[in-house]
Length: 233
Ligand SMILES: [Zn+2]
Image (cartoon, rainbow, N blue to C red; front, side, top):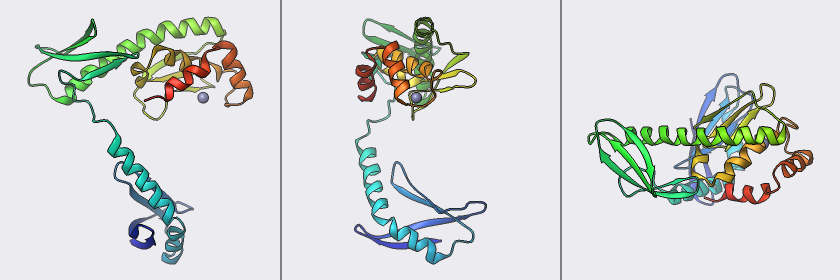
């Protein structure tokens, strides 16, 4: 069903999907094109849905414009071709792709040298880079986790490096497992310290409360400054 509502940006046609087993009307605006997705309970009437969407019209327009603007300004996805810049722990490397039989990557004097078959695809080159980023981050994180566990006397049961874009790290306070985002490989090394201390501190208190930040600062006095670095693009 398509519902038409008035907004300051003209008429909006919004597709509504009826779904079993949901209680409320759910509304979200999706990247990269600001598409509006609505799901509604089977029993919700068309008038009710229309009224709901009318009350959200300006919110939808504002969010859609924000998402479209963000997508426009986003840097292009790397293709992993010679000349591209790669940031490793806050240092810039220029990528040089060399023809070889097998994929491999190494970092020498400000150059990131990727060996790749000439007929390799962008996806394969990306996989090769990701594998190397993962190895670099795993090596650094291993050293830093051992250091911070000793310093804070808090220990994790295991940790892993994962590809997640929505957050820098996460932990399970029950199982004491820590996950670090692969994106940390592109940030200055202090950011990795910050995220490790942050996740370990959750073993003292799971919330971001006053106790949490007082421990954080005790363990890692530079934490405020580093938190700023994490926010930089
Ligand atoms: Zn946290």
